[in-house]
Every structure is written in structure tokens, then in C-alpha cells.
Image (tube, rainbow, N blue to C red; front, side, top):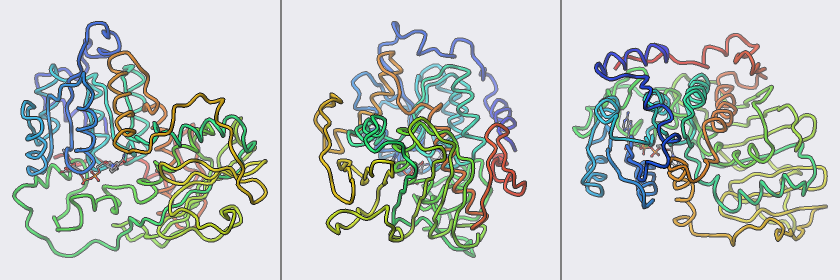
Length: 445
Ligand SMILES: NC(=O)c1ccc[n+]([C@@H]2O[C@H](COP(=O)([O-])OP(=O)(O)OC[C@H]3O[C@@H](n4cnc5c(N)ncnc54)[C@H](O)[C@@H]3O)[C@@H](O)[C@H]2O)c1
């Protein structure tokens, strides 16, 4: 089933509500002088969803109105914290019943449910905070950006480090020309979200989990313990987006933002042959981008995951220092800017030596090194934008392009060592066989 059909099905399921309510469209943006508090619904409240819930609720003008999770244990834990909220295990039912009692929807589910849940919320004119990556498929990311634009909705992708000191500083430094035009960015993590072929057999589904709802629009599979839920889904093709689609969204966010990149022209993923179930354990992905005013005419990204990056001149640190296990290196005409991940100051390297950086002209506040203090800022920015007091810095217009870029690299893992050519205007690869993976058939559930 394609997205349009899914939304039609949703309309059938939600008989009695209007999927395109005129009053719901842009409701928040148009009535900021009337709305004094934001009522939130949270879809997925275990794992990161619990952090999202608490960070959003820590805004003093938020009322948590509804909680949804397919795992009754996680739902119960959230309900203890917010006993006044209504609880649901099916987000479609929540959105149908609470349409008039919710202003903003927070989506913190596994990646394959980001678009189906967010699209339905946006069809109802709701502001949406959706975890990274924005979507599981390129076509979904584009559809999410389109509807957010058409309805002028307030949106934010859940990349909270986007609002952290060191990343903002690195963006200012790069745009100020500290290393001149940037030819290459290298980014790396040793994390490994790979997995082998599909396991055999079936386990009984625990009583607290609704497996059909967990699968949602994704293909049906027998339940197996320790393979999918919780968290393990990120290693699997049908539900997650591999290490690149997870850590890459955070680590490439600053280069993407600072260099004002669009989507790439070519992508090559060096990895093992696909097995149809789990992602490769190691990848090295090379992207070529059209130039921008902050880059050389052609700009290259090189991503490496699953182990430490191969030694390279670009990654040599002064004084034989060890490279931080995760991070990014900008390579420019006048030097390099090293941005370890995370909450660490960017460092300038020129001719093999560290150089002091004058940051006084940027008028930044003092760095905050406490995650618990920094992280809520990104969430509060979203709520403040809903209240008409601020602007989101990672809206879907931005997040969809970053996500598309990341997902193209993930998809290229299906064609190991082959260079794929992306036609952004047509939203197609020149290599016809790769186009089947841009969209997805939605299962009726
Ligand atoms: N921004 C960050 O720093 C960060 C960190 C971790 C995870 N994430 C993102 O958060 C999302 C969740 O990741 P996680 O590690 O918490 O996964 P998880 O599997 O640990 O938790 C997902 C939660 O969603 C629930 N859920 C699953 N399907 C659902 C559905 N259809 N409706 C309602 N609830 C559903 C699960 O029961 C569980 O409570 C992912 O998109 C991930 O990329 C972001």
C-alpha cells in the first residue's frame, strides 16, 4: 500500500473525523495570541520516547494530554508520571479521539513508524516533533516536508544536539571561513548496527506487547525475542536505518547545516553483500555534492562505521593524539576543523598544529557541559515555536533533505561498491534497479 492509500485507509478507520479540517490547519501559527498552553500527545514513550516526554513536559506551558505505546509496560511507566493523560496503544485511535484536545504530537517510535504516525498527525493540522531520522524511506521524507509546507505546520526533527553549544560554534566558525572553502568532510563512529540473515523459528509474543501494532505498516514477520523490540530494530532493513541512519544523522548534521548542502549527486557504499534482513556490520560511504558558497566546486563526504576509520592524513591529530571514537573532520583550503562527538569544543588544526580560535566575535553564551541542561533546549524551542515565540532550527524543510541524504547512503548499501547517481529533481537514481527502494508498500494493519 502506498502512502496515499494508507491515508485513505486511515480515513476509513477514523470514520467520523475530517482528515483535512480547515480550522485545524495552521491553527497554532494563526492563533498564537489565543493559545496559552500546548497540549501534547506522545507516540512511543519507552526508550528515547521517555526522554522526549520528560523534556517536552519540562516546558512550563505544556500539558501532556495523551500517551501511546504498543508495549503496555512502557505505557504504564509513562502513565505513572502523567496520570492525567489518556492512554492508547494505537496511534490512529488516539488521533481520532483526541483530535480536538491535542495541539502537538511527538513521535518517538522505531523509524518505520515515523512517517505513518507523523503524516496522520499533520493531515489533522498538528505540529509534529519527530525523532531522527525523519523517515525510513526517501519518498516518506519528501511527503512529510510537502505536507508540513502546504499546511504551514510547526515541525522539528529530534536531533537535540543541533541546539548544543559546540555544534552551533562549529557552524559559525565554518561559515566565517576559518578554514576557507571546505573540500571534504570525514565522519566516523565505531558503532555497528548490522545483523545477519533472518532468524529461524518464532517465539510467543509477550503479553505486554501488541506485535501487530508494533509492525504497523511494515511487512508481517514472526516475533523473535531479542531481535526487534526494544531498540534492536535499528539493525534491520524493514524497521531501522543502520548506523549511518542513526549516528550519521547526528554527526553529519553540523557539516550539512554549516555548509548549506543540498542532496548529493553520487553515493558509493563499500560494505558486504546484502542479506535481505540486517544491515552490513561495517560501511564506508562516499558522497559527492554540488558545491555551495562554503565549499569547493565539488564537495566530498566520507563516512565510516563499524570500526575505527582507516588511518588517513586528513585524520592525523597534532602531538600524535588519539582520534576521538566518534566525530567529524572538516578539511578546508586553510586548515582543518575537528569536531569530536559530542559536547566537546571544535579544534582548529593548521599545518599539523592546533591553533587558538577567537570566538569572542560570535557573542555566544558560555558552553554548558551538562546534557540534562542542554538537551531540553531543542524541545522547548519546538514548544515555543508552537506558542509563536520562537522558530524551530530543525524543521522538516531542513530535516527532510538531511534525512534524504542519509537514507541515500543507507540504500546504496544494497549495491555494495557501486556508484549510484541521484537525480534530485526527478527523485530517481539513474540506476533503475535502485529506485524500488525509495518507496515502500504499506501493510494494512
Ligand atoms: N535523538 C536522539 O538522541 C535519539 C536517541 C535514541 C533514539 N532516538 C530515536 O528515537 C526513536 C526510538 O528509538 P528507541 O531507541 O527509543 O527505540 P525503542 O525500541 O527502545 O523504543 C521505542 C518505543 O516506541 C514504542 N513503539 C513501537 N512501535 C510503536 C507504535 N506503532 N506506536 C506506539 N509506540 C510504539 C515501543 O514500545 C517503545 O516504547 C528512533 O527513531 C531513534 O532513532 C533518538
